[in-house]
Structures are given as structure tokens and as C-alpha cells.
Length: 308
Image 1 (cartoon, helix red, strand yellow):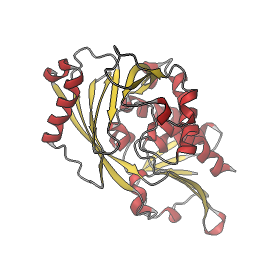
Image 2 (tube, one colour):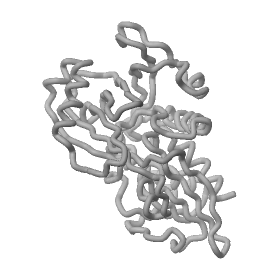
Image 3 (cartoon, helix red, strand yellow):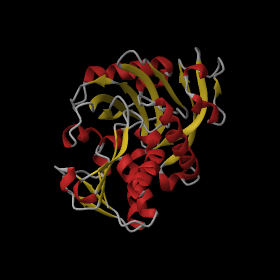
Image 4 (cartoon, one colour):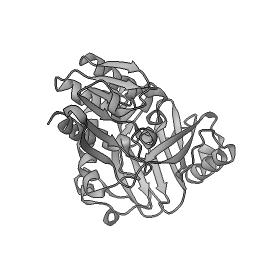
């Protein structure tokens, strides 16, 4: 059994399969630390992902796993951290929200406008990806640094396609499109909570997330933009938006500029396809801005499709 793709979705799917007793190999062009997953903000929350009726269950299944992993943050990279989703109301969320423990309307002291307070998993992605890879190898899995150019030609009875944006050319699936996200990492001036304020109608958002390596500031959601080069003007605007909420951010030393391309699709593709000779191809891609949020739920369903 071969899982193609080494980002958060591919690694998590491979872990679930390997720990169920299957012999699994990951075949990926790049290690997890060089994928889009590695530059993600890392906050659990269903964002820019469809279909809503399925996303909730996938997200809640993942939340349960992350809550367990948060007991070992130094090992797993997962912590439970308090924060506020600004400009967000309970009645604008799906049924899944009622099952998120402690989710409530933010007080005026916590946020000046309408918002929701929550204590959610915040994941240090480079650390978590390394941990997932180690867990996979410990379960008997193997990782191969190889480029796959034809899914049907992969030498395995079962192939699981977790190639994210790569599925656009590999499947091919032209409905997979990039949504560019730019972030700025700065020295943390003492911020201990996260905050998001997302304009779903536009390409700009405001968020900051305290990670062990610094405070991650965002962000953008630029549809059909492929550039991986950080734009200094956008970076300056990101810092200004975050500093308008927490003024101490304005003088924080910049550590890094990051860009990732979210693999957007009208809806996640999670389905089984039969190949010639009785072989099976399972697709698990198109998670947009919520690959981290649904990784375990989607991995569990992909494993059922792969082994059923």
C-alpha cells in the first residue's frame, strides 16, 4: 500500500493505515517540512473547506485526537491555547460547533466586537510533522523520496492520493486551485493567546498565533495566485493589521517571511476508484485551508475506503 504525498494529510493517513497493521510506504517528492503544511498557522478550525455537512464530523474526529496529543506538547507539537475568533457568531457555524467544549460568545474585554472565545488545538507544524513521520516509521512504515507522475502506474495494490495541490496535474483535476497565504513570523512580545478576524469576502485577514518559534502573523487568501515569493508590501500590511489589535506587535523583530499555497477545491475529494487489474485508488485531497483541522477524520475515512 502506497500513500502519495507527505504533507499533513498524507502523513496522518499513512499513520492510520500503518497502525491498523498494513504495510505502508509514503512516496513523496518533498519531506513534510517542505510542504504547504509546514507553513500553516496550525490552529484547529474549519476554514475554507467544503462540504460543510461532512467537514464537521471530520473536524470533530480530529479535535478528539489533538486533545489527546496536547497532553504531550513537547513531543507532539500540539497545545491547547485560548483565543478569540473575531467577527464570528455561533449561529453562523454548522452543527459541529455545539460539540466544541467551552465555545462561547467572547466578552467585551476579550474582543471589542462580535466574537467567539475558545480553547483549541494550536499546532507547531514543523514539530508535528516530524513527530508524525517518526510515529509512522515506528509503526513499520517507510518513506521514499520519489516523484510520482502517474497514479495508475504506482506499483501497489492500493494507492492513496494525498497530493494536495499536486492533484491538479497528477489526477488531473483542474478544479484544484491555489489560494495563496502569506505570513510573517516575529519575536513574540508577550502574546499568549491567538486571535483571528477573517474577511470571507476578501483576500485579507488578521490573525496571530503564538508558536514556540515566535508569533505567527497573517494573512492572505489570494485565489489562483501561484507566487511563492513573499511580497514585502503585503508583509508590512499584515504587521500593521495585527498591531492595530495588539500594539506591541508593531515593534517586534521580524524573524521570517512564509508563503503557502492552500489546495482549494469546491469540495474535498474523498472517494475510492477502481483501477485496471482490481487495484484500488483512494483520493484524499482538496482540503483548502483546513487540512490540519480535518486530517485525522479524513485519514480514518480514507483508511476505511482503502481497506474495505
